[in-house]
Image (tube, rainbow, N blue to C red; front, side, top):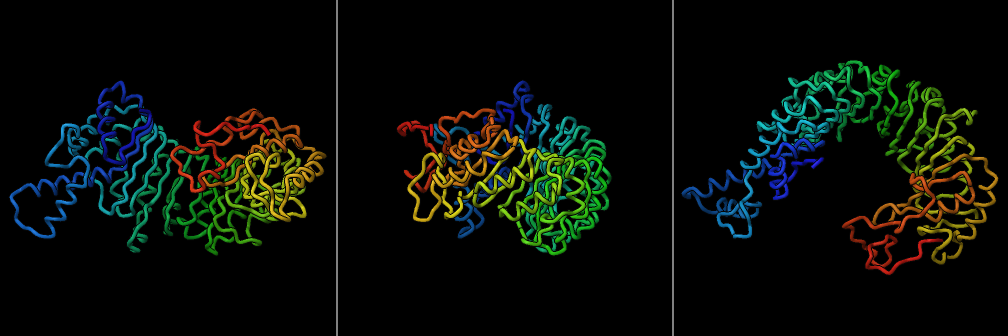
Length: 492
C-alpha cells in the first residue's frame, strides 16, 4: 500500500479503503493520487437512482434513459445476488476516505487531477490538504483553467515541498485561454521560495503567462526546470526567468516549438552550473536549428554539462553539428560523460564521430531504426545482429559487411566508453540489441557494461514481451512470450 490511488470506482478501491482504516496500514502509504471524477459521477448517478425510485412523475424517454444509466453503473441495483456483495456506494466511499485521510501522515507525493469546468467542492479535498501538507515533498496538479483559482490551497503551508508539477487541462472554450489565472498561480508557487527545487508549468494549448512568470519570486534552491513553450508568449519572459536562476539551475529540459518567435531557442541564455540537459526536439527546422550552431548558451555549459539527452531522431550531420556546438575545438576539455540520442541508421561512422567529438564519454544510449554499412542499404537488425540475421535482400547491408567495417573503423579508436545501450522500436516495445552491443564490446575493449546492468552478461530471456501485450505479428514477434515456448539459444 505504498501507492494509494482514487481514480476509478471498483471493489478494489472499497477493499483498499477498508484496509487503510487501520492506521498501521495507512502510515505505509507514500504516494496518494486523487482523480475524483469517477467518484463524482457515481454520486450523481446515485442521486438519479434515488429520484428514479420515487413515485413516478413522468414517463417516456427520460425514464428509459435513467433506467439504462442506473443499470450500467457498478454496484447500483435494486436487487442483489448473494455473490454480488454490498453495492458500491459513493457515500460510503466518501465516508471511508474522510476517515482514512488524517492517517496518511507519511505521504510525501500527492497528485490531484480535476478536468471539469465546475469547481470541486467535496470536503475530503480540503481535508487532504490539511492532512498531507506537513510532509509533502512532491506535488502534481492538473487543473482546468476555470477551476484553478478555487482549487489551489492558498491557506495551507507546505514546509517541505521540493517539486511542483503544474499543468492545465484542455479547455474547449477559447475564452478559457484568456482567463487571468497568472496571479493566483504565482501567489501559490511563491509560497515555496525557500524549498522549491524542481518546477514545471505546462499547458497543452497556447496561453500567455508572461505576467505570471514576471510575478514569480527568485527560488533560492531551484535546480531543475522544464520548459513548456506554450506558456511563454515571448522568448524574453523565458530567458529572464531562467537567467534569474542561473546560479542554481543544474538540470534543464528544453522542448522545441514551431513558433517562429522561438527560432533562437536558448542561444542567448548562459547557465554556468548546468549538469544535465534534455532536448525534446518535436520540431526540427534543420538546417537552421539554433542548437546546430555555436552560441553563448553552449559556451556557458560546455565545461559543466555531464548528461545530454536528445529526444528526437537526428542525422549524422546534425549530430556532428550539435556536438561541435557543445564541445568546440577542444573536445578533451568537455565534461560530457553520458549521452543519449536517436539516430535513424546506425553505422560505424556514427560511433567514430562520437569517439572524436566526446572522447571522455563513459555511457552511451542509442535508439536506432536500422543499421547500415558503406555500399549497402539499411537493414532492420535482429536482437543478435550481426551474429545472427535473416537473409538480406539484394544490396542490403549484410552482417559480414557490418563486422568488417566495424573492425576497420572502431578497433584503432582511443575511447574510454564503459557502458553502452542500443535499442530499436519493435512491435511490442523497445528491443534491446544484444548482438550489436556484444560486437561493439569486442571492438571497444573499455566497454564493461550493457544497458546499465554493470555486466556484459546477456539476460535470459534477452527481451521479454511486456506483460499483457498482444502482438499482431504472432509467431514472428521478436520478444520472448513465456515458458510455453521452446527454449532458445541466447548466446551468439
